[in-house]
Length: 140
Image 1: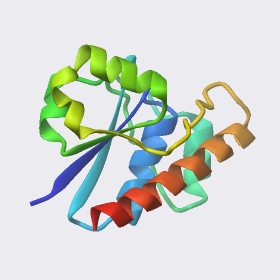
Image 2: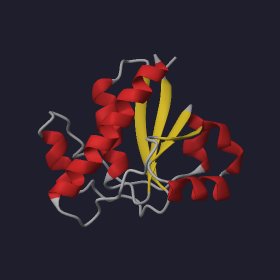
Image 3: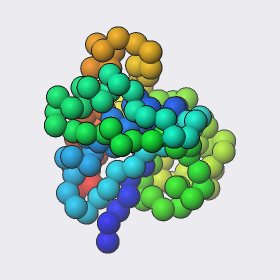
Image 4: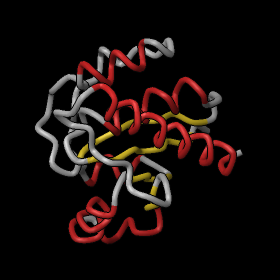
């Protein structure tokens, strides 16, 4: 059985697609990562800066299309990792029945690099990688 892990950010174009790509690259066949946003307009590509940084790590997320969080997605996943405290408020408000699946990726918020410089994306990427390494160890 493959367990599904959902990564959640706001627009599903920066942080959560990067997390999905990193998780799927690092994780075994027992798990698959997907991503969504609490306020994501559907069908948008991942950010160019995020794709560039991941490409340097041999991770390709060029096929990513943003999607909004939904009951259907939450039904099919085993764990939900969110990026910041803003997200848990939305998760609890709109999807309270899934509360037991919700976990913060890191102790501190992963700051949204949207519209920022490549350095801001790099900082977010480091925080995302740190969180993913921790959860992969916890999931084993």
